[in-house]
Length: 346
Image (cartoon, rainbow, N blue to C red):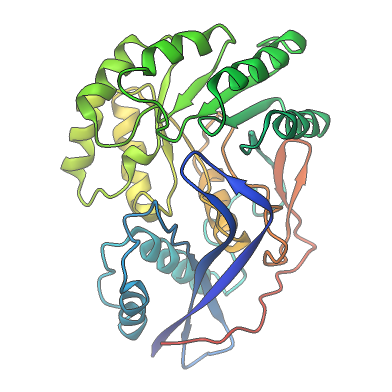
């Protein structure tokens, strides 16, 4: 008989993680464990990475819904993105012998690395410049800067300092505005940003403003990538309608937030049919979720650098074979997973 249970786990940041929306020192996540009572020593583990304040799953009775899913693990999954991803991961892990293999690939076999962008969290100007220098010294050739949290003029001066030293051929810059611009000032700001040779900018205005976002995508001198705009969709027709209405240059896939792996595959199918570029990012998951997303990405043959985490965000991340080498995320087949003892609930 297939059984499932869950446990809440609090991840502690190594620093104050700041976006234009909020500041975070800790983040709760949920692990789900699935096993067959005929062979209980083999367990599949997945992460239901609820992102409070952003995810459409952020509801008061989330733990009750998760408990119900665990009580009936073979029933259709609830329409909650994080729970779908957690169960998809755990079932795949169980099928592959409980070895944290979700999507078998050369990456998980330690044969290849995944190029990622170096994420620069918001902070004051001096802090951001220090973080930029640290990423460059580590070998990152693509930086992603979160903007919208400090004075816009200060953000422009940071970009100028970068471009005074590094040409677009030497260093690619991606930006993430997290919806911090307004429909009224977005194009003016995008025009000023464009002088620094920006690869793309994620979500310049809030999600849900389709008419305004379409206008921005048409007129922006910088390619627009949709991020938060992909959250909360429940069926294929709604997904396709949104892409047709906005016509973005890129979409950014966070499987934890945009439907799990099965629905993320549908986003990819729609985007490629419409000649929309895409890449994936993690969404503050632990190494359990990061591992699953990295394995999924490595099976897609996408040539762009991904927005995956490094596994280094938290003091108490789950010890794993994931490691960084320069600007690539790698998997050491000679290392082991160390899942801590947790209180499990059904």
